[in-house]
Structure formats: C-alpha cells, structure tokens
Length: 350
Image (cartoon, rainbow, N blue to C red; front, side, top):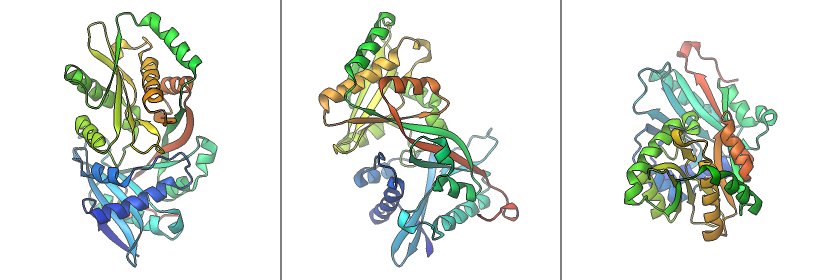
C-alpha cells in the first residue's frame, strides 16, 4: 500500500476520492443523503477562503482503498490557545481492519507535528441518536484508539412531509397574536435587490452565532461566500428557497432557507439554520418560517417527503422547536479532538 497525494481539481482524482468518501459515509446509514458527483466537483472548485485543503489516499495496484482530507485554517486565531487542523479519513467497509485508517492517521499526525499544530479535530457520523450505542460504535473505537477524545454531539433530524394540519394550525394560532406589524415573504434563488443587504448582514450574524458551524466543519463547503455558493447550487439544478420575516420598520430580521436537490430521491435539506435577529426573538418568527418552507415544499415539490436539519445537543430550544414541528432524530455526529504532542511523547495507536 502506498500513500499518495490527490488533486481534487483533477477530475479522475476527484471521482476516485468521491467514490471512497460516499461509500464510507453511507455504510450503515439508511437516511444518509449523498452528494452527487457533479455537485461535489463544483463544490471543490469554489474558492476555499477558510481553509487550505490537502488530500491523501492509500493506493494499491491502481485502486484507491482509503482517502483523507486535511483542512488547515488560512487565518488562525492569534488569541486561540491551540493551533488547529481538521482531518476527515474515509475507508469503505470492504477495506476496514486492514490498517488503512491507521496508515493515514499516522501520516496526518506526523504532518501536524512537523507544522507545529497543537490540536487535531475531526467528526464521527453514524445512524441513530442513542449515546450508549454511540460509545460502542466502531468509528468511536477507532477515534479513541488514535488518541481522540469525544466532544459535543450534533443531532441530525428529519421531518416527514406534509406537515400535519393540526401542527400548522397550532403554530399559526400561537404566532399571530405576537406578530402585529411583521410581514413574511418567500423567494426562490438569490435575494431580490431590496432585501440583499439585509439578508447578507443577517447571514453573517447567523454564521457568527451558528452552534453547529462553531462545532464542526463541512469539508465540502468551506467558502463563506453565500451568493457564489447559491449560484453554484442553482447552476446545478437545485432549487434554493428562502422564507423571511420583515419587522415593522421593513428590515429583514429572520430567515430560513431550504435547498431542494434536482433528484427526487434526495431529501430536501435545510441549507442554513433558521435564524432570528436577537432583538426580534420571542415573537414566534422561527416556527412561522419553518412552517412556511415546509408548506412551500408540499405545494411546489410534492414528490419530496423529507427535510433534514441539524442542531447541537446543547441547543435545547431549537431541538424542542424541531420536535414540536415533527422532526425526529435520525443520526448523530460527534466532534472528536486530540492533542498533538512532540514525536517522542506520542503513544502508538492501540
């Protein structure tokens, strides 16, 4: 087995990496939503303004048996106590227990040591939300065997459409008494000119307060350019729908966005966490926006039966709202982290 560097701007390399990644991630996860190859290639072509990306693979006789993506922040926080890097190793089930994951992790740890990083972060994803089962999951065992400690949990939820009529009625009845002076609107694609500046400012605010974004990194989407990313999705045939709330002063103060992939067998996914400006909370805006996007899907994309979103375990308010609307937990993602020690202090993998 040989370690090789992969260049994702090379279509052959990108397709090989994508196949390894999707095969590894989908194993044992019936509700996993794959990324289409054509979408993956376009995502990799977007400007990477947050991280420097490196990809390695394990080859034997011309076959790629495993691959790993490494993300190094382009502008590390000078006040941070650690110098971080993210790693995402993937090994398909057919090649597990052959030392491929350990070979990649050993190389990645060595790189981190050589470049002076002090902490390595990653994520472990699997079906279900039972923490007792999670502690025994083979992915968790692998992470622990390489020195990682288990951190906070992110829960992925799924909503079955259409919404129950009584759910819609209860949210509307609870919301309207608090909504005097507020207006709602819904648009598809990029924001209309009159709302663009408000939307971009609110999205920046949302990113800064997004607990999921703060705990994890999506290795496929590392650009912060919302408009460019949206244009890419639209060009690939996805529909991007945004519900917004406008305050009595006619400013955009809340948003919720749904992205609908072009293939009917893919779930519609909430592209961003629903967000409400702090000064306008407790007005029941978030439930109204979630009902609006779900209702749009039922009318305009009736072949779509599921919506997926994610919340951080500690965000009990958003988790409670998700349950009230009808979301059910389907998957778990655990953030894992390890200290990077000098070579002489590192312990070999168990």
